[in-house]
Image (cartoon, rainbow, N blue to C red; front, side, top):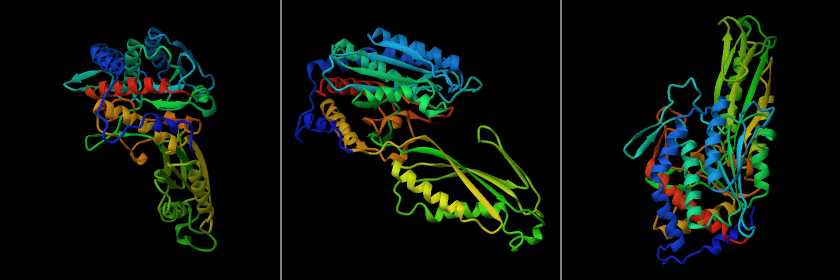
Length: 435
């Protein structure tokens, strides 16, 4: 899809010989970010030290309120919106109304983490150039980058005319269901915006900052197998058949052999399998039990897997192929497959590439190396994927994060300032670009 954002690549284009140069206003934003370092780290520590695991609704709201006050101080109108029927805490919506002439910008982040109150990983620590803590990068560090950049814009006067909506979700790590409710506010914001900037962590490869303009989808599936059961001496016979475990193995191997070839960046992992005389799976679909004996042909099996793809067309094509494979049953067996798509894909559109080009003009003017487009198979899904079909966007404007979702999660502190400077200049230029 070619969108109006392509004009940005032309508007910001520089000859190869161009000398790195910022305007006086942009240099003042760089200085403003440096001046904020102490305040920004204090805010990061304050956010990290307050537990906001997705299911800790009170904690998510508390952290959201702290972030909301920072937006209030920048002249945004803020609102915490509850989403009844999703069993989640809600989202922070912050709006800054500008002069209506420039690109309308949607900022995306989240305040929830994967670390619930019963986790042993609860506090912020700092060692040299690294900050450690639950959600320090994913995504509280990203939110701090966002706020630091906006504060620099305010101090330089470039925020005054900017039309910006920030949607800070409270359930990115475990999205509420149904998705049409839990992501409705994000989608509504995208429909009145021109560009999406997502403040998830920055990925580096061999010390080089990478631009993220595409992300694969994430969805899960459940396969249930039933079969005739009897004494094991009759397995493979016309009267008894093959049993559920052989049928499950056939399905898994056919997936391996028949699906992947010719499909770029398509993966379909099986992460859980159980079979026997009796199998059960819990309501969260993450724990199974199985009971059986070696002399019984297994009548039941259950499998759980995930599917990641680049486009909606690739998802539909692969799901159809998987259904066909599941239906090719061995004698004496039957099987069903049920899909649950959690995150849609963010395809690598030309408009997204143009936005990366605009960011690379910022890099050149700052004297930073050009950022290449990141292979989307190197990172997971994110909230920006829900709006990728509506507007162009770029992901990875947060700090460099290591060990996300683990007790070793840490942020490279200098990357916070680098990213905030990039973001302040990029947002200022976008906001000044006519719609």
